[in-house]
Length: 227
View (cartoon, one colour):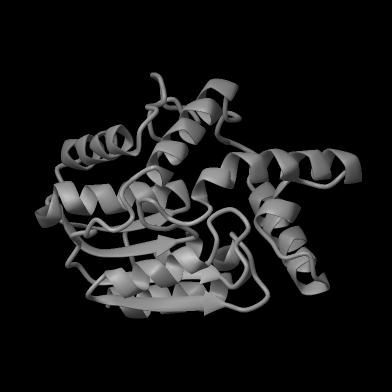
């Protein structure tokens, strides 16, 4: 976020029921997208670039499909198309990562976001240190109700019709690590193949958090793409 905001106006927000936003978290990607559209409209913006990570990548796709004139360019990271391979297993992968973290005394992101190599784990430590640098005005922890709603939305996204056209003509940058355990990397290749105006960036020895592991390179790619 810091790297992007040097030359771009970045707006990061918590959707309903997440962080310090009130309300109940929707249990569908489509409802989450409508919340985001309402938020963008409430700010008086008539054209935006979207950056969606993981579940946010699903939401970004729906926004662009439902309100194509609202969107200029899109960046989708660690995500996949509706009906994507292995996405319905995200809940089980999450539980497994949490269990491994509890057994080893590590943070779940060590297992969920980063590869298990020395390089990947060093990147996890650096990432968590950056997250911990902010000590004031932090978001509230995510609730169990929100986790359940998000997993319900993710599971429904996996049940979507994989062969249905995505219907997004915008320029799209698709990014991921080469071994994403949460949204398997094949989904990023699938997105890039099915979007007519897409670029693909795959980071080596990286998992779901590839854009955080290679944050300097990703920021440069993103800024070049947005320009």
